[in-house]
Length: 192
Ligand code: ZN
Image (cartoon, rainbow, N blue to C red; front, side, top):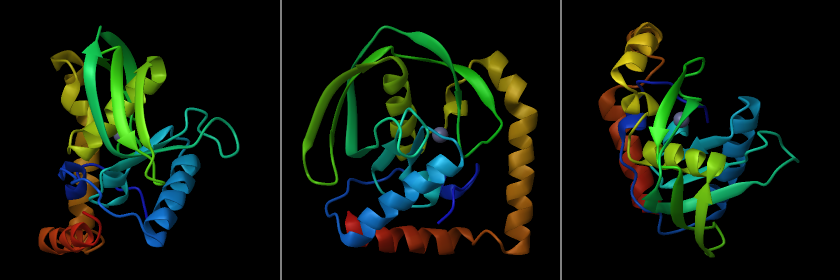
């Protein structure tokens, strides 16, 4: 398992709700935490590891053994309140940072892998992380939410990612569109 970079097609996939949790999925979640810590991230969505599953992991401490490891399945964000601008980055676009305007406060409803219901009001960094990760599950990148000026600033770096992707496609390192689609469909049949 690896973190895929923009513009990998799975990052544009709208993930469907998970209906079953098995030992393999629990192993995937552990590996997602490992990948997130290795990249010094505070959140990682399944789409970013090439999986069409409606789940993400996060830990605001970005370090194993510190902070709190949280896993949210089938998250739903509602009751947005206020608005604030804060710089964001993304493990699928490493090195790119730009300010994004998002609601300051939200309600998060989700499930844990153990099937417990989560229903919390969030603000600050956690509200930010949750909105960024839920966007991933809908195929949305934070760079889709930039103002025109910030978009122009990051464009040259985004173009570099596109070039790297194109060359990965040519060398066969990145599978074809059809191969990726078939893989995602099989995984959806197993979990969704
Ligand atoms: Zn991201």
